[in-house]
Image 1 (spheres, rainbow, N blue to C red):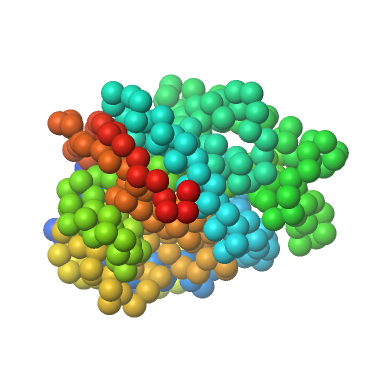
Image 2 (tube, one colour; image 1 turned 90 degrees about the horizontal axis):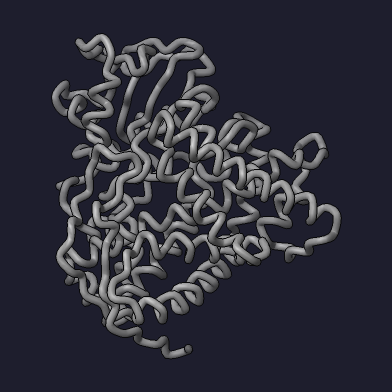
Length: 418
């Protein structure tokens, strides 16, 4: 049976404990699932590979009405691929798989590399650089250029401000979220104009670009996406690329705290580069949980779930589950040398199958951008890290080092092919 917490409602405890809310209770109760109430609503919270497979396989859950409206409206919006299920979801997902195919991922990384090197040349003229703040416009420009979106006038700075507001306030409530929603509305107006201009022939993005693919996409009924939904999905391609900046900051933090890896990558040894990136994604906090509503009745771990039951899969808790990972609180990239690739174990961006499930289609993009950033930090940038507050509060959604990682850039080593 799945135990129930004694507390009548756990909302305050969830906000107080942050990312560790589930983990503390899993370990105290010696279970991988428990029942409680959040926002006065009954919920089952679960972790682990079996829970991830239950959550993502078998079409047992819908994402509809499974997350707070403030989070949904800032990070997905109604009608987006994440709000769909079954055949409509799978068909829309094909559009995102076309956008993120291997050739397009390589092109994105190439653009990111060039944008990074231009920015790094400027960083060397500054007394200090706050890496997170510097990455926001850099990644926004990269995402727009790659997606076939015109980089003109103040568009980059405007989108940077709007995307940053969406990401920073997705885990908050009240006035900050309302202000971020206003900024999101501006982004949607801008994106709708891009879709209309592309359909009218005023813009001619390349055939493989996100703007072209989304504009031309036909749903299963043969009809194109509405201008509104196409705009939402374009933002859902651009904004997550900007969000990778948080992982890059955590990568910089890991290189600083574990300098042997920085020395290894600086020497040109990339054999553990992907392992390092995966360990950053496992170890550091990103999304805390993902929610679902049961679409059918079923039994799991002796508990009967009914249609509409609310379930939260603890992503952070699964990535720190001692039943999956040895020494889960130690940063050890070498653990991935023998990893079997189980899609239910490493789930910072969700679990399951990319093509037919709700696993993030941009996961491969995230990994490749992080790998390139680590190369740049370790191999092509000479910098020091002054004294600062590098603590990462696990009560903050989304998490980030308090100082956002400040660097003093002394020089930039050019690539051999530059």
